[in-house]
Image (cartoon, rainbow, N blue to C red; front, side):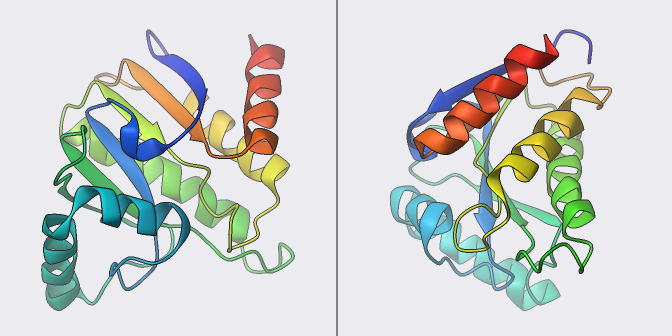
Length: 174
């Protein structure tokens, strides 16, 4: 990566000021728990309405894929929704699917010429992806991208465990 800065924050992704935030969505795109529920609640009905339109048009979003909507009442300009994999003891290609969540989100952000993006800890909540493995995949994936537009990537960690894992990875790779 050329000039892209990586930041690690502990907090609420719905309050982060970046051009785009990434939502760890489910395949229906109709909101749910965790990050998904928080983004839908904070962003308001506009996000849900656009997700319904996308769902009606293409039938939802597959694991590892992305779609983009308005950010509604959020500080961001847009929300990229990606569906992370459910952990199945590593036997269902979960690592590659998680990597695709980050790759496809970054490609879409670059396509829209966004300067900054914020990611949650995709799949580490109710989908039970091991946090240490997920953090490593996230950091390695963004570090290995040749980004032209994005100047800042923020990983917003909701819990202390993820925050510590990401900080340790950033320290050891600098």
